[in-house]
Image 1: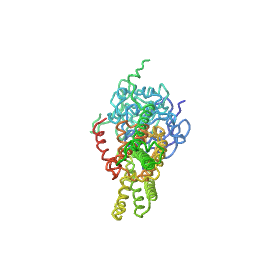
Image 2: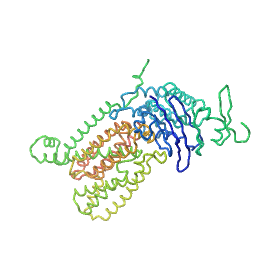
Image 3: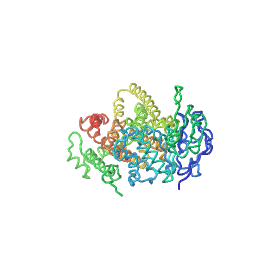
Image 4: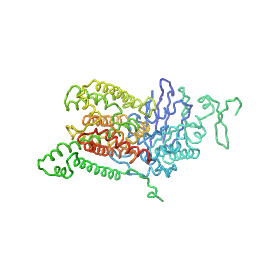
Length: 262
Length: 344
C-alpha cells in the first residue's frame, strides 16, 4: 500500500552554492514532516527534489525502494502530489475545473474527465469552497486560490503529499483547518505529508518530524522534539530563539533586536 | 448520507455538451459553405447556382460551381480552421492570449519565400513551395533558438512565462519583415500587385483545396487527445509536471502541429491575418478556456469566419475582389470590440 519516501545522502546546490549536504531521511506512511529554515535555505529545492521534479546533485531519492527518477511522470503522479509555492494561471477557469483537473493521473488516456466528480466535491466541501465552485479562479483572493490548490492536491488522492508553503496567505482559521486536515489524513489514511512553513510554533504543533536547513549545507532531520530546539533554531536562523513552556506546551519566540531580553 | 448534488452541481464542460456544441458549429459550417457556393457576383442568381450545383449537365454554371466556387470555399474553410487552431495552440504555448499563428515569425519566413519566388518570376506552384520552405525555415529557427524553452526538462528557475520564446519569434518576424519591405521596394511594378495580394491573403488561385482540410483534420485528431494535459499546462509547468504531464513533450508537439498548420495555411492562401488571433480569443470569451472543447471549436469556427469573409470579399465589390484578411478585419474588429466590452 503506502510506501516510504527516502533520501540517501542527497546534496542540493543552486548555481554553485551548496544548500544541503548529505541529507538522509526516511518519510514513512503516517508521518507529518515540516521543513524549516531561513529564506533561500533550500526548502523549496528540497521539496521539489523529493517530488522528483529535480534531480539531487548527489545521492538519490527513492519511493517505495525504487529510484524516483525511474518512475514515469504519470505513475509518479498517482503516488505523490506536489503543491508549488504559487500557481499562475494563464487562462481563467472555474474553481471546479481547477480541482477536477487534478484527477488527470487517475484517468485513462482517452477519458474525457467528467466521469467521477466525487473526490473533487469532497475536497471542495472540506476546504469550504462549495460556494465558490463556479467562480473564476483568477478573480479569487490569494488565500482562496491557495485553498483551491490545496483542495486540488487532496483530489489527486496520493500517498505522499508535498506542500510548498501551504499556509502562505491563508487566514488563521484556514491555516489551522489545513494543518488539521493534513494531520488527519496522515493519521487516518496513512498518507505521508511534508510541508515547508515559516511559523515555527504552527510547525511544532502540527508535525511528527522536522527538517531544519541552515542554508550552508547543514541539515538536521528527525523527530520534531530532537530537531526543533532553541539551540538548533538559533544556529540555523542566526537569531536568538528561546523556548518557553506554556500550559505544558512548548513555544518558541524570537529575541527582539533592540538588545533587551524578550 | 445527505447529498444535495443536484442543487449545487457545478456547470462543467461534459463530453455531451462539447459534442452538441461541435455538431452545432459543424451545421453552421455546412450552411456557410453552401451559401458561399450559391452566392456570386454579377448576374449569377442563387437559383442558377443551385441548378449548376445539382444538375449534372455541363453548363458554364456547372463548371463555375464545381471548379471555382466549391474548391475555393473548401480551401477557405480549411485555411480558416488551420489558422484558428494554430492561434489557439500558440496562445497556450506562450501562455499569452495575444499570441497568434504568426507570433513566432512563421508568416515572415513564408512571405520572404513566396515573394522571393514571385520576384524571380516563378509560377504559382513554386510560389507555394517558396512559402512552405520559408515557413519551415522560420519554424526550424525558432525551434533551434528556443529549444531551451521548449525542451528543457528541468527549468533553471521557476519561470512561468515564455518570454524568451516570444522574443525570439518577434525578433525573427522583424528581421523577415525588413527583408519583405526591401523586396517590395525593389520589386518591378508588374509584380507588386500580386505580392501585396499574397501578403493580405488570397484564395483565388488555390491549387489543392483538399490539402488544408486534410491537414486540419489531422491536426485536430493529434491535439484533441492532449486536451487535459493542455488544461494542466495552463496552470503552470511545475504543477502540470507534478500531475504527470511532460511539459517538454506536450509543448514540442503543439509547437510542431501549430507550425505545420500555419505553414499549410500560408502556402495555400498567403498570410491571411486576423482569424488566428480573434477566433480563439472570441471563443474563449463565449465558451470558456477548457482546451478540450476550445481547440475543435476553433478549428470549426475559424473556417466559418473565413468562408463568410471570402464570400463577402468576392461579391461586395464585384468584379473586383477584396483581400479576405481585410474584409475579415473590417467585420471582425467591431464584433470583437463588442465581445470585449460586454464582459461575460
